[in-house]
Length: 369
Image (cartoon, rainbow, N blue to C red; front, side, top):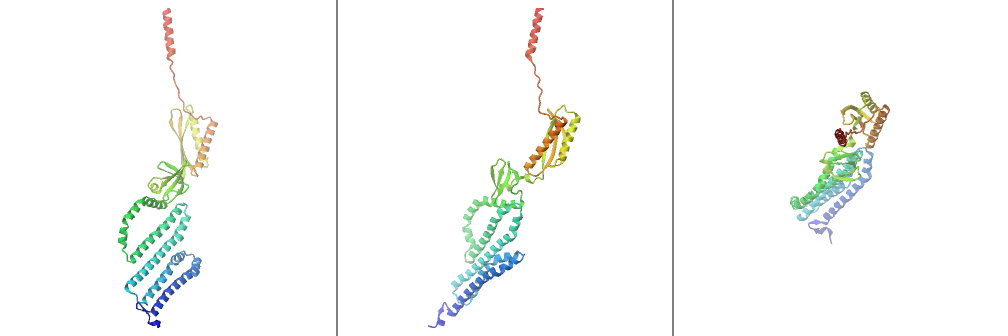
């Protein structure tokens, strides 16, 4: 039997053999190219300081092999005769493979850019909030690219994407409504990254909630109150409220009233102001301005208004500083005999029984006369 006389769908054995040869050659060259990339190009990219070649390598490592095979497969189809109804599927499959390869490349390229450029910046930032967000952001970007590539592949296969999306519209709407709070909190988390109103470990206050930021997630933030309870707040709530960040204060104000007794002479009142001012100016924790003023004649004391600032080195540091300053003021006042006032009241009592007895005695003496 003469093999050269065999004809399959208008193709000779030579044509079919050439077709298979080109297809297998494409597989071989694609695999060989992938090996060369791994053995040679990878080493070269490590020698350079430029990160862009690493990004390109990570992006083309697999898609390049696929696209090389697709190119050889396309030329292989040119050497044989294919019925139109079969050719349509073959060329559609080529379009689909090209779209898959391009989508794969874009996913790898985007992810590699994040790894080589974005993540080093995140690691250098003081807040760990970025670390929580970067992982889901990577997944979200890859998912969006994959969905777009999938829709293009479906369209290349001959299906109407618009009709498909319309058919999924009702279900998609239901899912969107169910997930709108999650999406809103996620977007709010991204906005918090950009704005950075607080960091982990900082003391914040908002909507009658006060405590230390313990954890910042992609959906919510955890606040540890000073009563040791844990408050979990959605990020969307935080982004729409006024937040007071106590940890960002450069100094803490102290404002108090010191009352002296009413019998304190003017000279000692002036001396009291001098003592307080000297203590504040010499204390290592305080910052100006220092305000000491005789404000008012109180109900039971001569009231001096005292205002100054403490360096913000933490809340315990603040309490210890105020404690030490108050102790020194008390100690110096005792040395100089300056008395601090305490609330007092003077009560006048009228004895009506004594008056009645006196009137009765007067009447008895008159009767005896």
